[in-house]
Image (tube, rainbow, N blue to C red; front, side, top):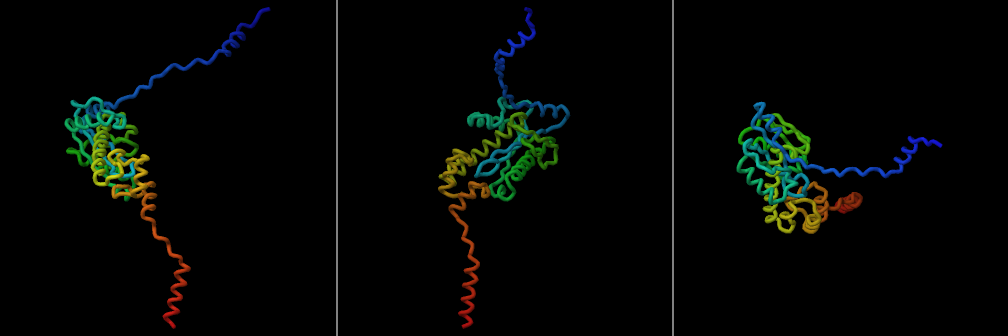
Length: 256
């Protein structure tokens, strides 16, 4: 009896366990100066990078920074500030300050309350660009939104992990804001600003519930609203029927 070899082979193959996928290594890329150099080759200079720190916290300002790196002295190890240790951020902060042109702008909690967090952040970023020693010819900004500047602007999503100038700006903004929050902790002890920098961690939420909002809290963020209502409840609205009855009784008394 002659068997169909093709069917036997197919059956045998179908009984085999599926092959395990090969182990993959995900490479974490570092920000590069490639985009800035491409503009320099076209005669476009200065080129700035912009980023902010502090959109998410319940307290404190948004701090924005703009940085123009020296093409011949780009600090090694630039990265998204969130991927760096506090010690490494401080080291790079000092190196950027010593080798680059930079500026910082702050949007206060009052401006955040008035404009909302997105508009306040964009305002601070644009202010930082205008505060540079020399107006750049081109700006790279982290995020989706372009800035209201007289120069060309490219918004780069995830830019602090891609563009060296943005990464440098993220470090300047983060270190500056962290230092500012430590100073605010001295002005408003008990909230732990020096530890959590105003973010809504459990320790901060507990202090907010216990102490109520400070002048440095953002009034319209939900946990702050809840704490304010607990410590400063709104007066009860008057009962209109009771008010009308009291008014009629008073009028009747005067008429008598």
